Amino acid sequence: MFEICEKNKESKKTEKKEIRLLWDFLPINHKGRFFKKLFAMHNACVVMSTHFPELNEEKCSELRFQYPVTRKYVDNYVKGQSFDTMNLRMNYMSGFMNRSINSWKKLIRKMIKGFEIDGVVMHIDTSCRMISLPQYELAHYVREELKTPIMTFHSNAVDERYFSESQIVTRVEAFMEQLGE
Image (cartoon, rainbow, N blue to C red; front, side, top):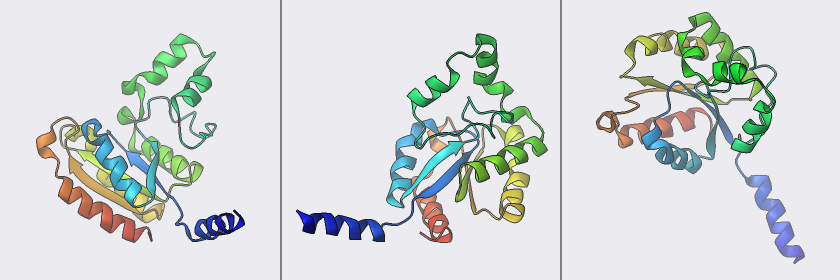
């Protein structure tokens, strides 16, 4: 019995550090399981997203999400808030997408610091070109000013024909090398 405990202690010492990622912009819902498995292969996971509807610029600094974020945790957080307040926060159109690039940068900076983010995965959505346009400036800001590694990729959030799993696998592997996996 004691031998098993000692082996477990030794294996935990050699375990790789978990890589904490921030997902920027729209999720690709039809490929969620693909990304989850791909990140898990590299001991990485998405711990926060700029598209998470409950999070807004004002609340970012006071939210202390436990890891992982669970439905129960969010339900407990929003308990007791008025319907009007929740309606505004849950409305995607009041989120980060229709804000200035400076407020988007501020939100990303707070998230990277507050959630101890190791790297950013930025989805540039080809179906939302006007909203995706500021992401090029944001990617430069994250890389150059925040000194945080970033991986960008182009895809369509709703049309599976514009998604290449092999290209994403190659990009993620290179990104994980950059993060020092």
